[in-house]
Amino acid sequence: MTYPREIERAEIAFKNSDFRFFDSVSRGSNYAALEAQFSNDFFVAYSKIKIYATTDTDITWGNQKNKNITIEDYDRFTAVIRKSIGDGEISLDWTLGDKLLKTDSLNVDYLISKNWPVPLYFRAHYGPLYTLSNYTRSEGFFGIGIKLYPNFDEKGAN
Image 1 (cartoon, one colour):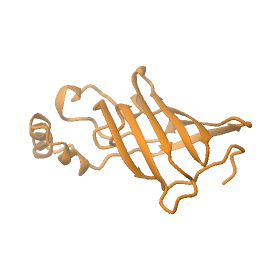
Image 2 (tube, helix red, strand yellow):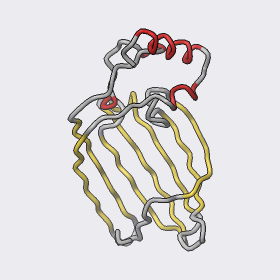
Image 3 (cartoon, helix red, strand yellow):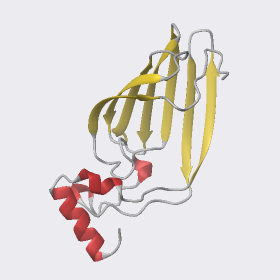
């Protein structure tokens, strides 16, 4: 959003709480990641640190505009702990940025059963990074969904 008309439209959408507008904003950055996984008989732990090669465009709306805020301030390090409970699992997903606890976010997921035909799960989210397009906006959210990424057992295998 670098053109004056785009900047004006984003500011109007922000003032009118038109957050659907921000879902159409293309944002992203290129990065390399270093990842590690640990598992024992009790849980699986996973961590990832991102090293950004490019950065997204400046925020041009709301109280964050022109403050040189970047995705790195919100999404640098992720730690996940996953534990099986019966034939389901619970996981905690904590993300920190360069501003540490000022911009951290947390997801708590509960997968009912790994063996059901539809892998139904519940998620509670607190903090920013709920959407990539408006990642600076802190939100509390509870939802129900289908978990489509691989599930790991206690030993870390698929």
